[in-house]
Image 1 (cartoon, rainbow, N blue to C red):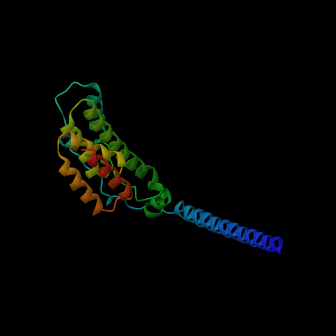
Image 2: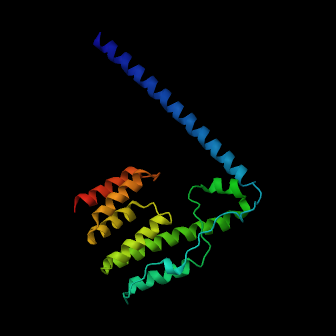
Image 3: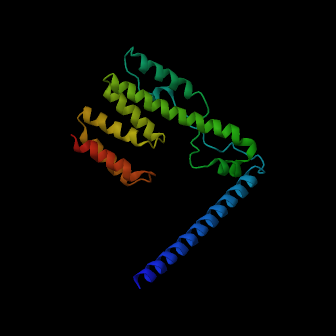
Length: 204
């Protein structure tokens, strides 16, 4: 009797597993078909006006500067001065397909360049902040991380390292304010950011 029950349960499990696999395959196939249908439509979308896209304008005076000849600091300041001469736009909310559908395939290359310029700008802000930290310029590092966040950085590491700068400057209350800021916002990794900030604050 036990053998019959076991075999029955096994058959039921195998049948359920086969059903779930078929369902997953159908869903995957449907998603793939929908993706390629949208991609095909995107590649047929005509060029549209992009003059209304807000380009990021950054003044050189906004880049925190310290009186130092530290090579890495000077290098990243130089990189940023070059970055801000290029047209930049935060298009992170768009996938490649969405971008072509919204503005036409003919604009895809130039808009991708705008977005890439923006990402390089944020990367170099983070790099400059780290260079300041390594050189002991914690106020400048704090201001640079803050600038990166204000312009759209969403990296957990930027938040955590900003918090470390606050501790170095004996400003733990600013970490609490930063936590409240993240809690009230719509950061895509809100939980991870808050956990990191609380970890840093707990080490004070």
